[in-house]
Length: 517
Figure 1 (cartoon, rainbow, N blue to C red):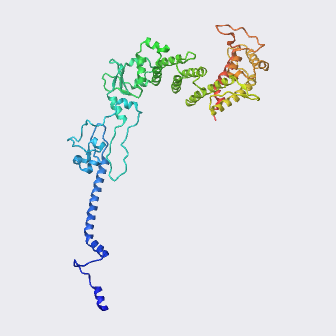
Figure 2: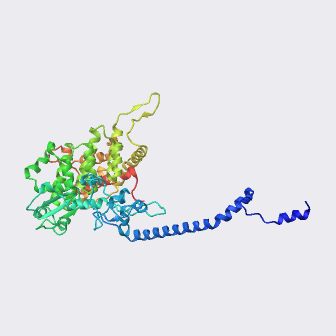
Figure 3: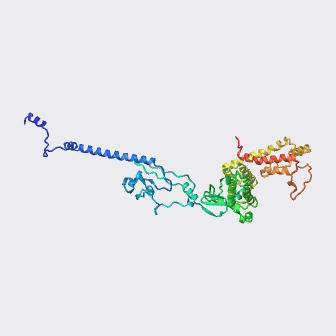
């Protein structure tokens, strides 16, 4: 075959007859040319459907944004996503509305009535009781749960919070068995309990009728329509009602240890202090002081700690002093309680003065405990103290500070010039007695350091026992020891009493340092 014939054959177009055979690459190109128009139309149709679905989702999202949350009693809830996609019975509802159970459980929606609401079903979830809710901690109203970000918005589900359920319970309270008086003119709802009492019972216990918040919040009720709701504990309000209506013989039984109800009296103390019922607060305070005063303390140590917390929170100073004395006495009698535990309690309650008393008690107790000498050594074996490392450092600091105080006290007292009282007729004798009590000769017969480092006891001894060489009139004995009466004249007696009180007030500074920078 010539070269011209070969070139003509190469320029000839391929035959389109079915019998014509192509290579694999030529077949791929041919199929792509034939299927391109159909594929383009298919992709265009799919894009249009996607745009339509996206538009519908945008409209639904706007509907959900504009729709307000429904209250607890209404079940006209937004439509769930599952029913919308599956096109089930709730598809015909307008504005994407579905039933409440469907919105919560995402199950199949059932047809609804013309009102657009659906009644409760038997298998609907049961709400917790009021007692269960009251036993749980009080929380704020719950909001709609946070939804995970997705392509389609989830329906807004409004879940009722504890506040609404408690409010509904307070609208239908239960009458108290003992303190609902039909003739009463004041009604209060505490928790889910309805109390009805007489106004004059509160008025006779209150020192001020205008400033009493309980009388101002109470409402006279010719009809039992809207009783006032109090944010108190039911036990505390029952204790108040008990004190208002209890007969005298029942209240008198509280002074007997077997009949004493500590929880009842503590609740009465708290609520009477809150509502300024002075007579009831005084009654509760007297009972607590009576049962906590040492040595006839009938309360256990944990009960004393609970009373101390209540008294500190309400600033009941007389009760605080009694509890402090009772706990200090318990350190001597009760082996289960330690000084470290009480110091920790005083630190927790920010009772600096009580901390000073506890450290001073531990110091005196440690100085009076027997010690033994280490064999073949000049050192002594110090018994262990039930204190932490920080507390032990504070005890050592107080020891050094009190020693320095006792060494400098006589010299400072000798330089002191007494102030003359208006009742003093011979101030020269008062100053002479004061100088003699703090003279060097008088302190020669005394210990250079007080026994067990009990400086308070040493000062009281100076107050009640005259130094040798000073003749004082014989005291009048009135059923007590003769040396218990102060021998100094009024001017010196007042000055020495001031020194003792100042040491008691600043006792914590010796162990904890100054509270002022």
